[in-house]
Length: 183
Image 1 (cartoon, rainbow, N blue to C red):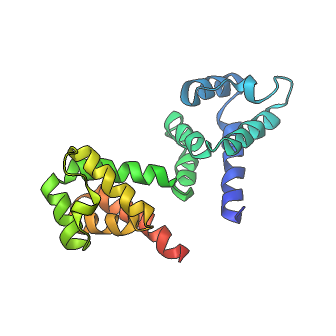
Image 2: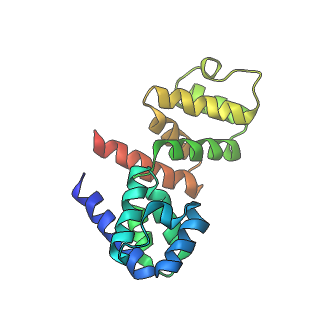
């Protein structure tokens, strides 16, 4: 585990303890994560141990980012939740979903084919099945580029085509910056 990841987990542990009493934590987990506190931790544990058990449960079940997002929504005035959220890596599936949604919203079928054919120099007819609707076409394109390790190319191309759309710029900045640094 990286030092930054360990620091983020320690901060989540502190935020759970500082931000919720036991009943508040029970309600928070039930409302935002649909899980019961006492299915995660024993009622006999002290508060710090309960918060640690919640954190470890979230890590074990790949729900840490969901826990942090829920904390940021439940306690919007607590800036530390937002700070952790900004430092956490976004799961690839979430990036894919966001890319599909943005393609559907911002590109017509013709524009999507042009993006693939002209800007990315790939034959759209090899990527998109002609009889599918625009939603399926966007999903086909995202999956095709992701399978080839080129999702960032698709995001960069779309961001260049839609330079005035902040969501494309944010997606390019967050995903493609991480990918460039990993190389």
